[in-house]
Length: 231
Image 1 (cartoon, rainbow, N blue to C red):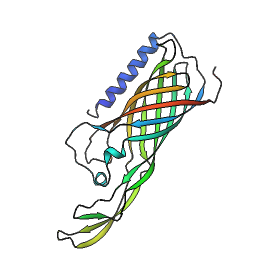
Image 2 (image 1 turned 135 degrees about the vertical axis):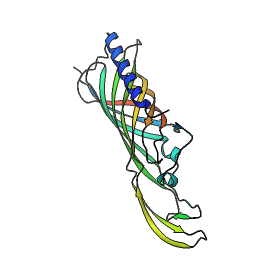
Image 3 (image 1 turned 90 degrees about the horizontal axis):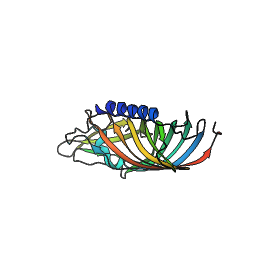
Image 4 (image 1 turned 90 degrees about the vertical axis):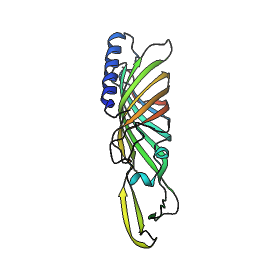
């Protein structure tokens, strides 16, 4: 999928929310509530927009699929602007691969084992709830996510000539952070929410040219507390 389609996804999302809001006369009934949510999210192996990619130096030190998939813990706050529309912030925590040693005959990393680190993500979303069932609500959600924060690293590289003779060292300092557009749909009943969605990337540190990829995700959240009374 070409990254220029992000704007189209966003326009379609806004159009659907506007249309549904105009036609839907029922309301969730939670205006003014501030909820604390907690739950896991499973990110599936990325799906790339093209097979023709030029990897950056940073990408050669890690596994892109492994670094961008797996389980994260999400903690967030959700505030209801109206009885159907909420704005929310979620922080995600993942303990995942940062980099691994690489030896290709000409370069060597000054590390003997793979390095892992706690990555953070920041997610800012709007959520619209629909009363399509007698019990529970369908919801659509979209927003911006800042992924792989706290992924800064420094690696000492050892360089060798074509005959394998050591010629010097250098320090690579970089990170794997990037921003994405996020969309999801799901079902909420009482305190529980189950959702399916995708992250859509723009420019990332993994490629020397714009190469987008999608990260499907499955999430569950449970509202642990109501921090303010509904109005």
